[in-house]
Length: 65
Image (cartoon, rainbow, N blue to C red):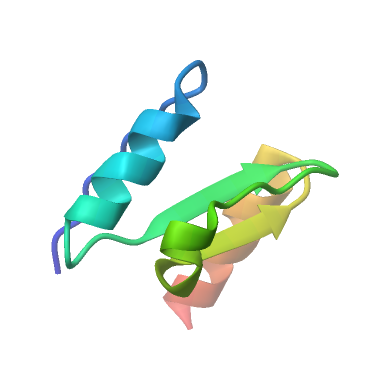
């Protein structure tokens, strides 16, 4: 399993474009109260609603099971 993390705070459209072009890419966004994912990548994206620190802690715990 390969993991590449791209952080595009200022240019999310670039993240969407790269995700759409790469067949094995998955887009994950974490934001409180507002999740936006383009229709083009809906089938390969996850939106997690919440503050970054608790969401990442829960993901870490889930991966350790």
